Length: 172
Image (cartoon, rainbow, N blue to C red; front, side, top):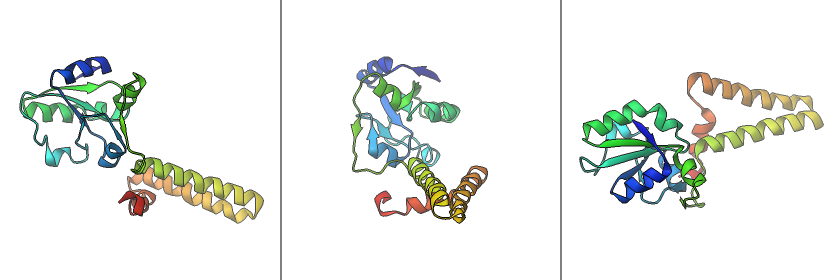
């Protein structure tokens, strides 16, 4: 699939192309490009291209362009099965904003789960180091525990902290 600039994307959208946001629903609800349809990559195989007419030009995007690039073959196959021409938006929503274009931002929606994990893990590590330095060296165990959890998450793909944060009321 060809990667296209923001300017070409705008031209194609003016001609009837459809922007498809492959980020997760929570990311889309927090911030999205006006008119983009949310079709999370995690659900794309099971739900396909809902209510998209054949021969529609599709422009897939994510936050930075990395996810769309990694899923390029899958997205191209999906477009082909539906008789659609498809493109990837260069640099995703980040590129859209860098070009000075507006997005729909809803600050009442939670930030994405990965950022929540990074904030929580970083805070716990910092807390462990500070308490270990000032109060008692036993608090360094907290930092070690969080570090071990991050290594475990990276190796296995299971992140207990993410699962816990996903159950928090602000993520409902």
